[in-house]
Image (tube, rainbow, N blue to C red; front, side, top):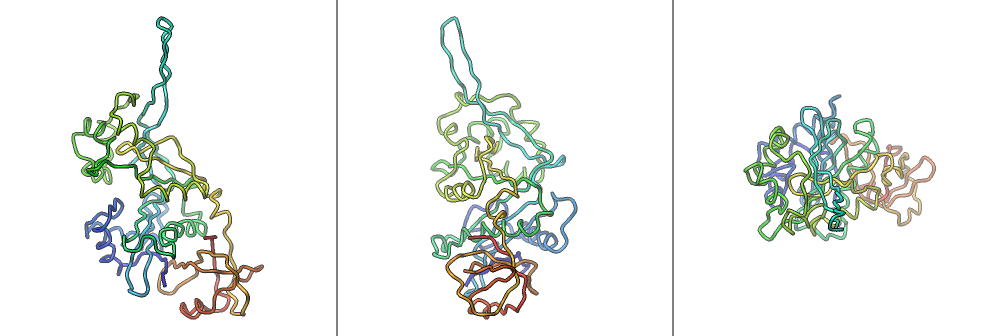
Length: 338
């Protein structure tokens, strides 16, 4: 059985091990950084700050058969402030035409922009490689749990939800756009710039080109990476589009990965939220699946994937699930379709 829940201090070692198996930008393979972020997340679940930019919510997926954390995802309540702006490249075009030679061109352009009153950001989605392709759709579970939480606590987040997707990298694992632009102006490699930007973004505004960058001047690999996603990220892109996210015609200034956004209230999962009080009466539940959450004495937030039936103000769950989780009559249950 698998459960989804808020991160715990006891998860630090599992998260450290997980960060060593995959590219994990939000929780790098650094025990001190992971410990700090986990402690901050615990505070946010219990007592979120009025300053939304300080609130980070980490969710984990636990395999109860081994008591091991095998997945993680994150919500940053506000990405982009006066102190730490959200930077992006606007993807546009410019039409050039000469009457003298009766010739015209449409040039793709990139232009640096910034946002100081940014949206809520979802990110940090990682699943242990050994669990990919699992019939329980574990990647979908650890992704959807963020929307279940935001549906329950919309006041903790901004009205707009933002997601940055990973672009394709070359055969050496390098970002073609970074090699074409970033390295030329910032004089550091991609990983160094990414690490520095987590705590200080001043160098981006000071050194990055501020005027239009013509994509025709870039190598083909760099042009082709702009707004595209890597093969492993295709399922995430498709999922976001299905639930109401749209490409913003903006990309990451380091690697060209596309930015997607949706209004929180318009996300299909949030719009279709349901709730009810648990009934222990036996009832034909049927095949419809949900992610459900309920109060727990052990964690601030707990959720699980299950079939369920919502009837008026009552919810009916499988007897086996009720027994395994020791759920009580009239327990308040909140759910989104899965």
